[in-house]
Amino acid sequence: MPFPASFHWGACGSSVCMEGAAQIDGRKPSIWDTFALRPGAIADGTQPTTACDHYHRYAPDVALMRQVGLRAYRTAVAWPRVLPDGTGPVNAAGLDFYDRLVDALLAADIQPYLDLYHWDLPQALEDGGGWGNPDIVSWYADFAQIVVARLGDRVRHWYVLNEPQCFVPLGYLTGEHAPGRRGSLREALQITHTALLAVAHASRAVRAAAVKPVRVGLVSTGAIRIPATDSPADLAAARWAMFDDPRKPLWRCSWFLDPLILGRYPQALVQALGQDNPTIAPGDLETIRPASGPLIDMLGFNCYTADTVAAAPAGDYPAQALPHPPGHPRSDWNWPVTPAMMYWGPRFLHERYQLPLAITECGLSNLDWVALDGRVHDPQRIDFYQRYLSELGRACAQGVPVEAFFAYSLMDDWECDQGFTRRMGLIHVDFSTQARTLKDSAHWYRNLIQTHSRAL
Image 1 (cartoon, rainbow, N blue to C red):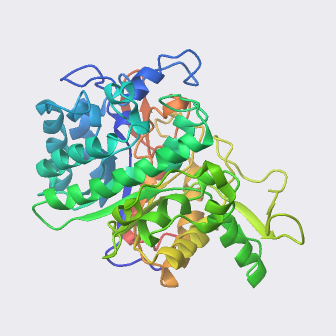
Image 2 (image 1 turned 120 degrees about the vertical axis):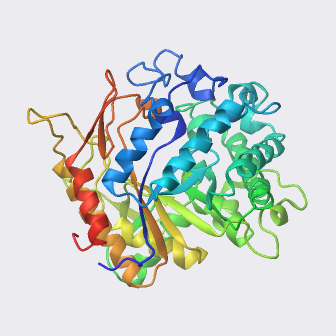
């Protein structure tokens, strides 16, 4: 399947899941450090204190990235490492770490894609209201300015927020993720509006602080829907289910992307939400999406699983979800394996938003271990990537502007509320010794990159 000649083949991780070093060199707690102390909050009761110890092992980890053949690496800058209290004095040791990491990546000919927020809010800011405090808009813009002023001479690709569809409902509605708040739907929707204002101000701060041209994006996720057939009715049902279904509105990517790119909240959701809609001050929507055009110029999307839908014969909703058949392939996370999402998701996103796309996360949680021969055999993960990337190649062949693919994750890590119970990496990590072992999938991915997709 054809991919663009300039395509970036990468992998990704995140600060809270990989870095460790949570209590040294000036870093103070994030909301995940605090949340992990709650009994029952993390599946195995562990904490991210050490994780993959990437803070100390970044140099050999970059060497492993080069061994895998990566052309790009996406990770996050930890807010509490750079600004331990969220605002105020900069922690020089924290910025120095990212300085060294960026230099090591570039020396290995790996392009850094940096997230400014991957869920690790400084606990000090959460104590002051966190994402529920409107002042976070200026706090976040200041943080963005500090980071980009230091790294913007070398880093071209910046994502100003990762998966608000996850950290808002899971952190502030159901309490399943840090900071573990349980609030009303209206409160959570108001937080989404604040987050969009923060994106707008941070995007401006990135461009103002960078000394070289940069690209600014948002990493989104949400309910991708696969049409049961190519019929007009099923296509319309899939689009409606992906963008306009009012059930679980915070999981609709349109709730976040429409204001940023189209300048308005999706009307179907606004009508359905009624009194739960956020309060929007005069000028807010123009701040989020000025008349001159969107403040973001690329869109990242995280893809794992999807539902298939068909046009409903009758009823309150125009689409009906079709059940997966008994025995359908599933990941260790019990997520159905649905390769067609990698065609339909990018296609529908491009139709609606007309922005260049990157698949910023995609991967399989699997039961992996080091075999007696010293290798890690993960044929299911290889098969998963072959199926998903073949569908992504089909989208590219039909003109969808996909620029990059990031396997999630570079290595097994501390998976937030799941702790060390999930293994999603191309590289196996023994969390007792921190020994790294390239899995069979890493060798396969290296061959794919070298042959530029001819292995599919």
